[in-house]
Image (cartoon, rainbow, N blue to C red; front, top):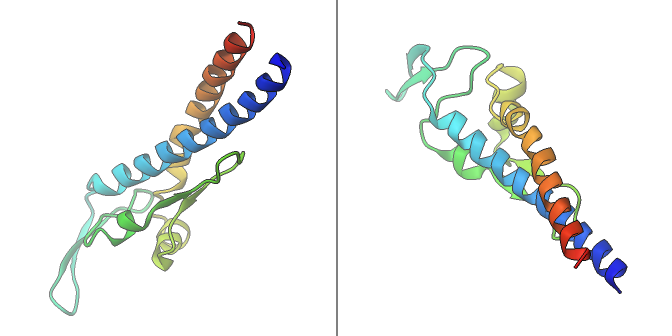
Length: 130
């Protein structure tokens, strides 16, 4: 019975580590976009001023639409998660215009997955040993 509980709880722990890391990636991506990156000031045809970030830096926000659209999709028990946006220009900024916001967030947080995974597995091992 202890061994069976250990397997079930380990799977939950692995899923939790994936979920926690995905949420860290989301928070990091939002913070990256919110931190202004100085570049060229442009004015749209409608008169709205925008500071275009430098290539290689995250995009600057005007309306908050991209930030508000960033979601985490993780099913309980799953060993994978999706962090991203349904806003078309999110991928366009990241991949075409060299204004990365999601990949740097993943890069920054991937090592926390390993740390979190080790912590939750250690916890499960200690609980199974009782």
